[in-house]
Image (cartoon, rainbow, N blue to C red):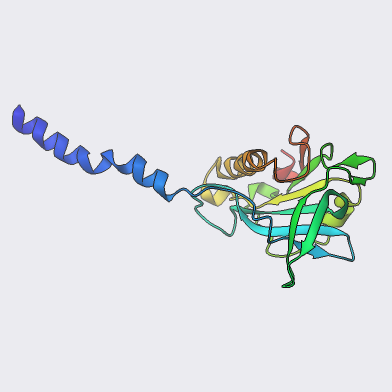
Length: 185
């Protein structure tokens, strides 16, 4: 019996440190407020490549982009094509302020396909930012990753945004998703 117990403990020992090792891999998730870009034609501050989960499986999908009406940001030009931004609490766009602006999240996953995260400016975001909305575009894994990977990713993106809400404009109690086909479901 002692030998069996010894063997079992020996087998379990390497796994006892697993939660600690996983916790050390996770990094503090945040938005670097010194890395915003600006689209002057559309009046939009934007940033892509923001990791929204602690241990992403695939960065093609598990990052997001944020597109914000210029009225909601105070900015300083960094001189390298980026801007350091802070929320402008007095700015208004189409009747909304940085505190009251709805956040919209498209879910473009027909047939529950994966949705790649943005790698640059999304010109379609301007129709939403012109309306005063914050446009949040999160990539997500699809049916090939197994259910419910896509839903899990989108929920993680929303939780991430809420966790950094003090840095960003938008009313995190008014996040609206929309889509068609699988994305609409």
